[in-house]
Length: 269
Figure 1 (cartoon, rainbow, N blue to C red):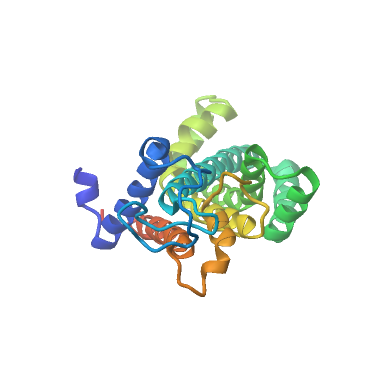
Figure 2: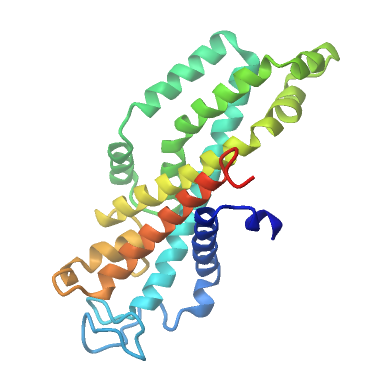
């Protein structure tokens, strides 16, 4: 692709890592050697072998299969939550910027209140109150990062609302909805995509932290954070059961950051 070739080396590395994990997440059930919860080894924390490419975990399950399934939950939940946060935050920001006045002031103060709550504490309270489930984790992660996206989207929208082409649209008699979605939003796409990438990284780290505390994806399924937590006893042995998911989280987040940096205005274009 011409677009990919125009990226700097760091951007191409980031793109390769992100695409790799997306493919793993999408094709996970088809390429995993064993079902996610099957006990396949009589030994625990086995080393890398021809049968178990990444060894076995603390219960004798195949680490590679667990890693593939874990990547599926981590990537899909993070991507869904980031997209939902950006969609909701941007929609509210456009409404506030177009309406202005006390509506804008009220929404902005409400978002400031939400963003002042530490994300980990907020998510822990909600999970403790309502239990851990995939839809709830998705909604919690999205809700936490809506205010951050709102502030960025509103700043962009307010600046664009003062531009001449928006004044012309108002003079033509266009309604608020047309101005928001046809005049302002198209000029916000690039920074919003970069922000969505950052939200994706934040959600990956948030979900991994929750899972490390035992409040994320529940057994027998697991995300990458859960795999680190459940195999923590193998750390002294340097087992691949704990090193593999830790490296997976690192490569996913670093890859996403490299790609985001390359997509900034002037980066690789």
